Image: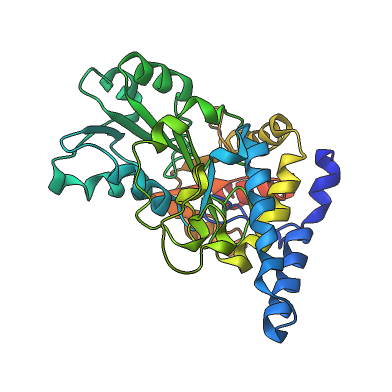
Length: 345
């Protein structure tokens, strides 16, 4: 599908510049959620019908990120998917993380401190140089939530590989607008409710086979079974041989909307999405006299910015004390110009 054709699938109220908080559903997503809500309300179908959306979502995420579906685990949040990776670290391991990281990719390591796991935080700009022979794992966001900074992904991976360290990336603020090679990392986790424009409650993890060997599926239930529908009751333990052994039973209502959202994005040229989103971000920056950047998320420090935007009907966020604006497929130039006028008028 061409980008301009796809952009007709949204009906947003003007002024939404906050995809970094949550994305807006295209019409196929909205329609799918309404259908599953009606089915739930009336009890007209069995859950197996809803479960088909999980398989579709897994396949679409794999296609979107260029990985094998057998290496994709489904869950409900980024931190939940990181947890078994952290639990699988050997006692005394050292993890290096940027110092201002979003806590979903920070707290899971910190709670392992009672086993002697050490977390070393450094500025993102110094992350590559901080990876050394004593580093067991490096964790970071591909795009920083606080200000939209795009991490030097390839350089971080190369430094980790040079020292035999694992790489875990949180792509929640990147996947859906920024092309990157997910399979270069050992794990990539993504919450789907932002740039993937899904209902909150669906999340994905690419888990490389070598990393999975060090992980323990502590949350395993019937959905992690080799044959889920033959894993409802009793012994023996019979888990899937691939990344599905780390699945948790999915929130079907969320995945009903996730499947069409990811399928839509997987059919688009992600480079064209990146160019569109970053182009709008740079239009915003230019209107405020700022130099252009390389991200769909930008932050600005303007006196009374939040109040000015609110009066103009522009919805943005405040992160780390600055106004954060984010731009995606349903954002228009008129939205950008409205925000610029509010901040400069």
